[in-house]
Every structure is written in C-alpha cells, then in structure tokens.
Length: 160
Image 1: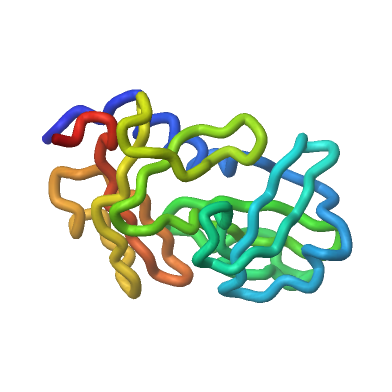
Image 2: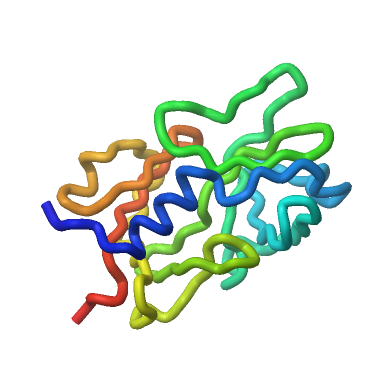
C-alpha cells in the first residue's frame, strides 16, 4: 500500500474535520437544495455562501443532505463535511471531479489546482452510488454514505 503524502493528508483532514463549522450563512443558504453546489468562503464568524453550478471550477462543495429541525447529525458511516445555518444544517461533501487535482485554500478550504502544484491531491476515480473504501484498492478513499459516493485519491504532484 502506498504511503499517503502530505497533500492527501491535508485534503482528507479538511474533509474529515469539515473545514468549516459555520453558524450563520444567511438567507442564501436557506434556499439551498440537496444536490446543489456552492463555494463557502470567509471566516467562521463571517462566512459567505455562493451558490454555483456544479460544473463551475469554484464549486467546491455539494449539499448531500439538509437536516430537519429535529435531526442533529449528518449521515454516519463515512466522512462528514458539515456546515450550519441559523435554522437548518447543511451536510456538505466535496464536489470532486474525476481526474482533477485539489489543494488547500485558506479562504475556502479546498480548491481546484494544477496537478503539478506541490502537495496536490488527484481524484483518480469518482464512484457514484457506492460507499466502499475497498473499491479504491491501494489508493486512499474518501467515502460518503448519503448520497453514496466514494472518491479514490492519489498524489497529484507525483504524476508522470
């Protein structure tokens, strides 16, 4: 099994830890729907929610689930990428594109970068409809249970 580099560790940490735990995204986030994509930037005390087409280079997150007032947790059994509004909780997952590379952005957490960027992470495969770490073989996996998606990750800056 290949050792994960610093870049993979950074991106996985951002995914695992949620990048942001935001308390007030404002009215724009309240109109969001499952499957919508966005970019969340700014500081934790002053976040900015920007709804974007999922094909946009800047759309770094996708809404996996919107929790109702009586629900308090995003789906378990995989990784959470959660952010909160004043009235509801948006469970977010990365909007990774197969073959694209990602790096760390101090403003938004994760951003698309050129694969030659130091410590970049390449998304080798996107397996929609499957939440299975084993599907990535020796590659690192980021697994989300709802909707079921597995991202197989590898070092981007060490590609030939």
